[in-house]
Length: 332
Image 1 (cartoon, rainbow, N blue to C red):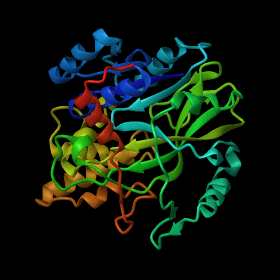
Image 2: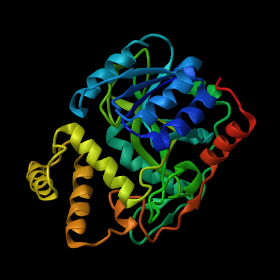
Image 3: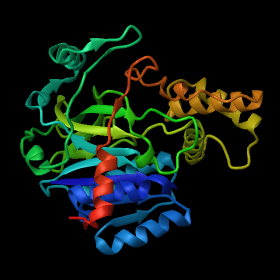
């Protein structure tokens, strides 16, 4: 059915919830982790789940080399009749059963089709941003039937819907319990996945990648519940970790040294993790002035998530985890 490849580093706050949720839906033996952690709390999480079938591969590589390692891991399942998707620790899978969401799409027509879909769905148009759907139902049951419906053409596939968490003002400890406000689910094409028969390579964010037929992609109802932003402090810590892994800054740089180096990098244009650089620079500047950034700044990079757009309450992940913990449900 589905093989999930998680790339993670030092994310103990999310890791156990992510493993429980996806292990319950897909089975722990279908999850493969590429981990660069040095946090003992992460290792304790793996001690619980590796005996139950979870596969973990540790890597000391920086972000600049990890796309190659991910591609290598995913190639182990070439020809196994499985769908392959790379994920991050803050991304949780669900799907909408809407049959209209499975569409073969030429890249040149993607924007036109997205606009037409939104109009068809009777969406509102925000004065500050693009249209957004009123409500789309998500589910996690019968994923097997969902994947059976996808045509195998050699093209890649898109997880067509995404919602983003609304960040809180204070640092969040129990992320999946405490955060239940999200942007409405939006039609997007940010995340790619592949069939094992046609997979060639993947990029770090799994935004593009290469399949054997690159004439377009299959637009699906696969959906990402994205705990992208939880608080300013949490986001600053994660951004710094990413920039260290790229080698953009070093562990012992002062705030002023970090600012100078990152501003020089941005002069090069659209480099890897540029959005992390931009946010972290704003964070460093505010800290230097003795100010605190508003949580609203965390979603400025999302064209679908504006402060004026009302958020939706989404408890699917929280409720699923509570059910697993209450019932002691084993992973499939």
